[in-house]
Amino acid sequence: MIDLQGFGALLFAGTQVTLQLALAALVVGLILGLLGATAKLSEHAPVRLLGNGYSTLVRGLPEFLVVLTFYFGATDILMAVASTLFGYDGYIEVSAFAAGTTALGFIFGAYASELFRGAIISIPGGQAEAARALGMTKRQTFFRITLPQVWRIALPGLGNLFMILMKDTALISVVGLEELMRVTAFAVGRTKEPFTLYLTAAVIYLLLTSIASLGLRYLEKRAALGVREALS
Amino acid sequence: MTWVAFLEMLPKLASGAVLTLELLFLSACVGLFLAVPLALARVSKRWWLSLIPRTYIFFFRGTPLLVQLFLVYYGLGQFEAVRESFVWPVLRDAFWCAAITFSLHTAAYISEILRGAIQAVPVGEIEAARAIGMRFHQVYISVILPRAFRMALPAYGNEIILMLKASALASTITLMDLTGTAKTISSINYMPVETFVTAGAFYLAITYVLTHVIRFLERHLHPDRKEPVMIVG
Image (cartoon, rainbow over all chains, first blue to last red):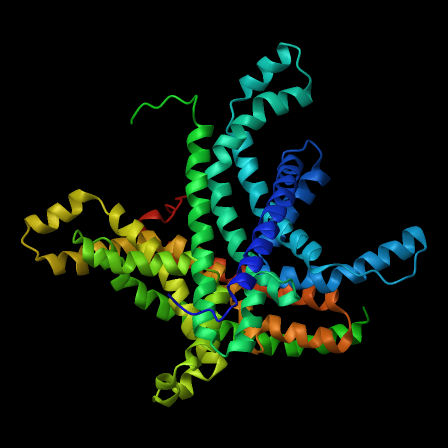
């Protein structure tokens, strides 16, 4: 067993922050992804343009650059908004966790919106028509008929995105959040054993991604319960 | 933003873009070179031979690139043997550390792409090659690999673009690539949003050019898919 020189507890605490960050960003990302997909399928051209512009732009930019922009820019943007809208001229500080969650969620949402769009249009239009004919409102149709199926179809893709998201949480260490990478760097500064510690961090990330992939396999099986398979 | 500040940052960002492109070009070439033996071992029917690439791919795809980069840049110096060996001048240099890490990282992804392509080569073509008396390695060199490369090209193009974006991490080990330059500029002019957005425009421009180069290559390598010449008359 490798000797962590008493930094095991610190690494564990960092892993917890990493998980919190990944899950919080997942929630933000799923919401933004659904909104983005709805915008892309909107009847109004300007809304479509907004949705397409969002995913095209964000998918073309390095994740790290987006994170930096959010962290260093969030204060500027929020202060500009606060002073023009509310006349508030004080200093606003954005926490690393908040900036990290928004940045990672923003990136996740851009990719997820493409997945959701594809899933929504793959559902036969007759189903929504039937639901409407039964008297469901548009909102009911979306939540009862479309969304459960979208979930099943988009799940494998979302799983991949979540794996990428877990690994991208390491980027937030650069803006000072005390997650796994950051605490590892701290321990490295004390022990002067960078290889041992970064390798430990790598193994922890491997564990996290492996557990996530097992969980996804379970979710995929569960979501496909009612689906008939011709070949199996 | 004043136009002066904007015009001042352009040449600096352009020189950062050159470094980004150097890293990208190196890792795309070396990565492809490493990926071929990895993919060949991966499709092997001998389990112990395919275990090596499996483990390699599992590690490089399951951990963040940042960890890999730090392992190479900070980690290797932990060992006395490395510090006293002849490779130390290379491993001490941030540029080469980034180039090595990116190459190893992208090789894992490219080898999976190649594996998919190799497995997608129609069985009939391989049987035909065997039937006319080609040896096993001949089948690989003149039938399977050329076919596989052609099929893998679009996915390889995607991987290059992903690598372009991932290369922004080079700035975390002191390199002055596009992102590193933008970070330095923004700490001088106090305009983070404007500076990062301009850097983002550089990335988008590079992506745009790369997609067109790959599309051109694709058309070039698939002469059969060329659109028929319309005869007007």
